[in-house]
Length: 252
Image (tube, helix red, strand yellow):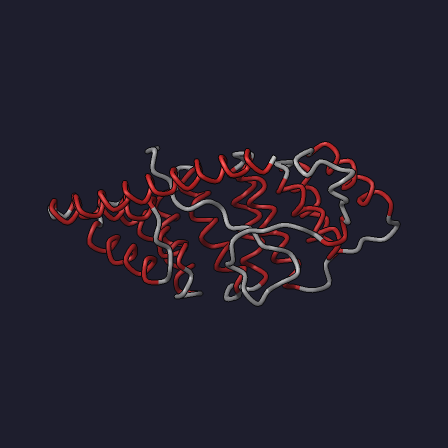
């Protein structure tokens, strides 16, 4: 395994299927956390609240439980999240919620490096509806899990499938490019990276992979230019982080 990895696992945001590929953001309104009473970085306090919500109801409210499971993901309680997602999938009447639950269950197992269980969960999600928004996420996540599991040829197949489902899924284009490059198909990988960039996925990670593809194609001058752009972007991000930390100290 190289130190260059395909995109992180995609997670859903719960009740919101209109734009499933927004940046992962969790803030379930039902938690009603008073920041004056609970330290927002105290994961133990949040976990206690989630456990109370999980155990207090005699009936399974799948939408509420989905929010609980997603909140477990936010505080890195992946085992609890996987269990909760499985319950959502078992009791959901809505196929979209069930598919979302299986997709996120796979992501929880992947965070635990339980790739065989992740693969199974992603396949459950895809079997429900193989052309939906969540199917595209499940396909690209499945590709990564298969790659981690040593099944690289299958990984590329599912990365291709994710792009077929949603041609505007930038992360899927990046993953497709990564797996193509791992197979030595640098020109095809470059096209995939360029598609991802056109769709807004422009960051140091993708620029570094694009530079690597250009190098393998023998276009060393272009590779150097792209690598330099990636380095400048990284330095700018680090400077922004330092400024943000300094501002936080001034505000304290």
